[in-house]
Image (spheres, rainbow, N blue to C red):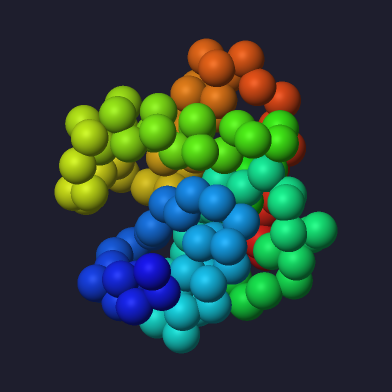
Length: 115
């Protein structure tokens, strides 16, 4: 839910899963200057690429139907099943771990960097 995003307003980066969630969250977090790493599968006809996103945000577009699978693996592997913060030094390190997770699933993807 969009209102849940406000609990992350002091974060340095937020990982979002799903096209709708990424679109709504990035718009809200834009106001707090927080970059996102979004996991999408393009089922919004590219609408997610046109929303407000903070510089240095990263959008992974995975194969159709794989955004939830990738998200579940991120939660299990990186967050140990919880919503707690990560112990990574920067957004690049988080990106690299997500790439590793996506490759382990054997899913095609492309990365869109927001500059």
